[in-house]
Length: 451
Image 1 (cartoon, rainbow, N blue to C red):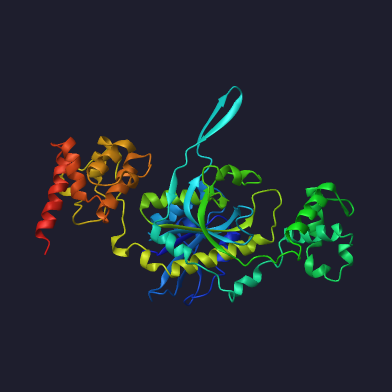
Image 2 (image 1 turned 90 degrees about the horizontal axis):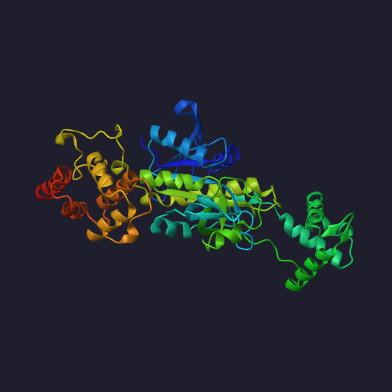
């Protein structure tokens, strides 16, 4: 049976929060079992707006990183096909653009550390290769409709005040010459004093034991100018749709977002796995939906109290959105499969070729010819444009077979270039190619005999 969604988490604490999502859950709820190679998975069905249940399988990759996430997803989807790949969990967020706990749906994914490093005159220079994985526009539209009800029970798990809000309160009290600990509202305004004070020392805003430094005084004066009527309350949780960047290492760098924004202006999140799922979904031609929630700002001043809540928020928003988007999932019966084959071996008997007019399976001999004759993305774009398509529709996929598998599927599923026009354009270059002739004849015959 084909799954609707394969939901991957990087770590177990993120997976545990997925299993805490119960709204709309159909009995018996989440059921854990041992899947392929003994891998622990959890299965559940949810009610949907269409009336048909949404079947979700979830697991975690045991370690952070692209390789682990992609390996686990590949193993599971090979054993149990899925109509959609998804991921939720935590990420670093862009300070000033998102708040702790906010959820980010990825409209674009890319690996920001992929590229080439050169050394010139002893200076290291990085040249990025920003290959992006885009969510289809209709999926982005659904993401933009996600909101969080103020009555959602899981919102109660959100910490009352970020540590930074409490730091600002302490600074203002010290600027006013007050003892924060002696205030009547101390416990309410600064409930995490034992965590706040060491952070103030670390930032060098306060000297031990409790003395405002020059830079701390400047910070407090700025706060007083910005908020003359008192510090604002933490904003309500928001759901954003924006680019998310993937990198190989845990980030504690206050400059990471300014650097990324120089070539991806709207980036809001940084994490370590999602671009790998984007690549896998691109190859399998299934949608990939990623929702990550902000647990920190990617610098040294982390607020670990938000980790659990961020994992829960991302899981709730992701599953909630998927329950309202079942109409966008590929049809179960039209799911694309890639048959096993030996590299370099083509079927000798024309009857063994897959007819594009009768199956959605990829025609191996045809893909082989196109990949051999048009191996470069520029060659593929030229042929695609000659067949009536737009150059922008041809993605920068480096492997020729993967590129032509993607393009052929698109032509079969109603793209601007139809299979017959693509084959006719290729036959202008290769008029005697028997593979092209066979598939064009099959398409013509199917059109002629169609009732």
